Length: 71
Image (cartoon, rainbow, N blue to C red; front, top):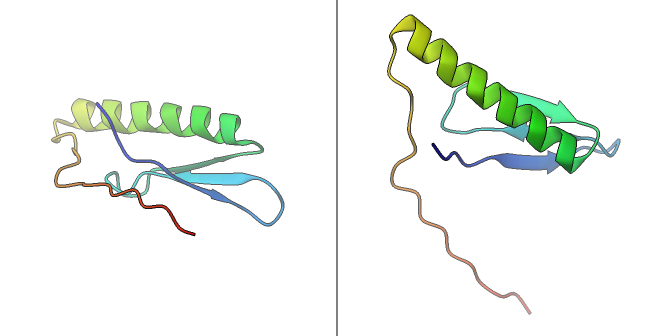
């Protein structure tokens, strides 16, 4: 499964990572690498909890990305 992760740098230099498709799935880390590792684990636990509860696992649909160059 693939999910979009939003990574935001905090004023103190740490990072917060969230997954818009998975309500409440948020993690953090002192570095980008740590935050991404932590959110990967959070996603795995979120999906596992959904399956254990018999709930459908949310998926991302309808996402399109456009890349532009800004001068």
